[in-house]
Image (cartoon, rainbow, N blue to C red; front, side):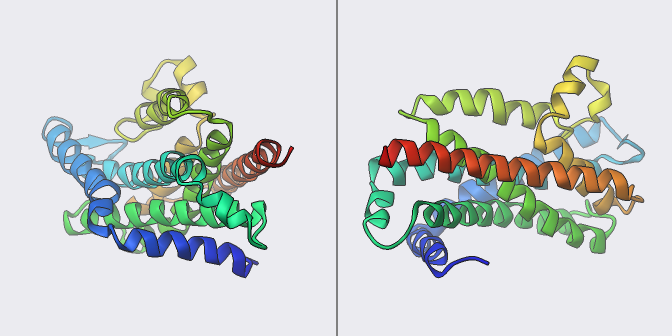
Length: 255
């Protein structure tokens, strides 16, 4: 159960975000929609089908996963680091009865909320453009994408816990975000890549997310055992990221 203090951290971020909601929506909502339009209609003119489905239906779930991944990761790294080191918001919170675990829980849920907002916007646009053959299946992807947002946020907070400057995030975005965007099946099937790249792609959580949401949104049957394995991987990675973030920040702040 989420404590009142963790909810207060989430609410503090929400109230701050409301003051700059329109500029924030450009990054978190409009960016993925532009990508969807560019690649869906651009590549869609030369690629009729992919994996047996129309290319627009193929790419919409990939862009939903991308929206969740990028928005939650950005919020848990760049924005969270600003609150941690520049604005010293976390120091102010920790001077009250709020614990470090509650601060991280609030930040985790806030980052996941931003990711969920982004993928939900792509879902709505995908439905309007006819890129979601199974509306019910598309709706069922949303809880999965929220869990995925929590996982991406936990990994982002683990990176923030280790960052000593803005430059540190160059590693995170180059070696973590970009490979997920390019090799996790957003634009093409993973099995089209060389074997080594396929092995790397299955280490990345994004590949497991897309393996669930794409069949759901196009109305294909799901393998329950495989889905259970994908979900378990996301949960374990979320737990590992959260524990690592808490351990590292506790040493930096209190030792």
